[in-house]
Length: 330
Image (cartoon, rainbow, N blue to C red; front, top):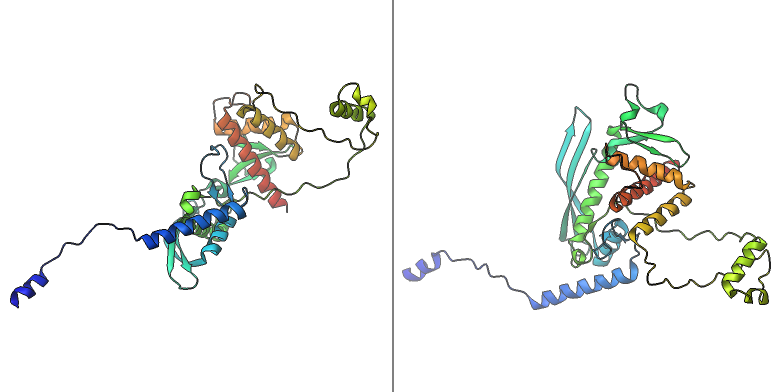
């Protein structure tokens, strides 16, 4: 009896061997497969997820806030408690930084199924600076040393420190919470296999173009369209009525040697952006030159000698700036 008690009281080694429960594994795989099917059928690129500009399309996309909301609905979870991990206030410069932990809770059982961490700081570029007109530049600042950009109306804007950092307290809290929620969503079964990360900024879903009444065409335009459609002498045998829209010919196949290179695609994107915002090509190039000089001071960087990555970054900043300007004007 004494020997049995002594044997029971001896310390035992804990097993560190990991085993897979085939039932639970099969359930997890089924959940991941269902998630992949939902993403394939219900998600729209540019709204629920996006590819980071300049990154290869073969890489996994980034999940956006609307997509995270659908995934949470699919898994029947909701946002739970928020826990402050760190809060730093720089009294000297009025800058504020914080980090929070966000939990996701299963609605039916109330069990925490995932946690994520998010942070935000007023040192981020979009919070730390403001773009102002020349007459709004604070006294004592040398305008020649400030980063600049050209607005779509031709006005030159200057980047200065944000004088109202205290107004960002609520915004930073919400941004940190949103990033934490996205991080927790990525930890749900199957999400990390489909998405590389979480993108807070969600581009607007492309709107359907307005169907304006077609403008009457000149006789020369009608004849040229007829030549392209019917070709040569057949144009006279099948004339297109004047002052009416001509049928658009089917696109011709691209010859094997006429490949759309990244440089050509970047030029086409620049032209499209200029037209969309009412700028001339020269005005857009001037803006891009300023952006390149701001990013690479002292290198005399211009649109012509900038590399592909620099052009992508400049055009991305151009779109973000105008999106911010349009949002302010609304």
